[in-house]
Image 1 (cartoon, one colour):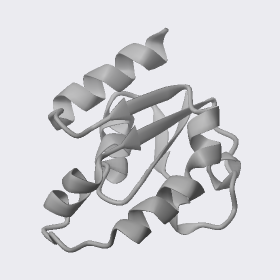
Image 2 (tube, rainbow, N blue to C red):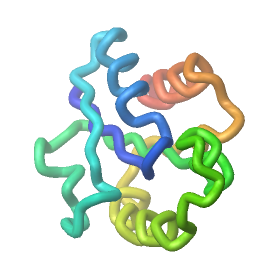
Image 3 (tube, rainbow, N blue to C red):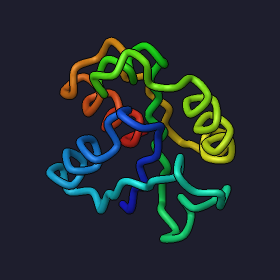
Length: 111
């Protein structure tokens, strides 16, 4: 199964895509939040779209920058709107370990 993984900065896209590859999926992260192309995630025509989300507080913590701009966060939210509406799986990664996110995504993809 081909799986595109999108999400805002520091949501875990690269980490989760790599974990999905370890489980046999053809998975890749998409830097949708940096693109003005609203359906960039669909460029490689995935079978499933996974959207990872994280709160502004979590992004700031993961980036080790308490002043990371909220306007960038809001811009990324807007740029991810098409992906969110099209996602097969949405996971908020705020309070989850990497293993918990992977387990959650694998469970939802199996359905």
